[in-house]
Length: 272
Image (cartoon, rainbow, N blue to C red):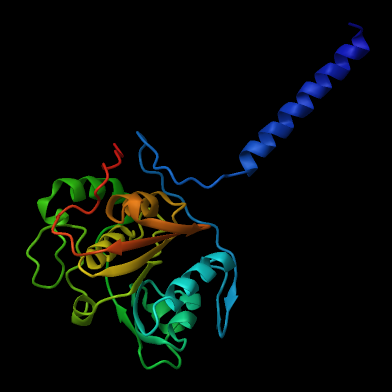
């Protein structure tokens, strides 16, 4: 092989390697399989601006994409005169909650600034309650093991009178949250975008426990590209109940009435 041909061959190999490397680092395919044998990895989502109706969002709101918003809208419309429960205030979801055909909508939010900014504007059936979350996101792996090992966490019992030391249980919510039958529950809060910020572990657990005590409840979890949202959804909402997905949004349909104290019928995913 001549020197010229060797040079051309070397340049071809080099350019091909660079192309494959760029393709690998810039492309991320969605994954629906739970990772095994890895420690929790916490990362912030990218925040992009989006608008929905009269509730315009800022660039730090991590809004739903149009296709994710359409999925939520479709689920809500399938429950005429329904009761909606939201963990976290999202201006796009607030617009859906204020639409005609919704009986009751309650938002649970821990950030007073977001409560001030996204106060309901016109629907009498929409209310916002400030809540607090005890556990920070960096404790997710510890809490997942606690949820499996503590007998109180396996019981589908909620409320102020529930006697349990389960750290995932939210027992100090407003009474109406426990008493009402929820047709749709959306988990888009707390923010959970930093290790020291409140995570969504308890929100997902509580949504699941509420749904299991009803006849049928649709539960939607946003930001499932993040470790906490993905793992806790698999653990308590269960893979067999996943009916659809769009982008970073998973849609589960849970049917209660079972006498079992277990959340999932399928074998538990091992995240150890």
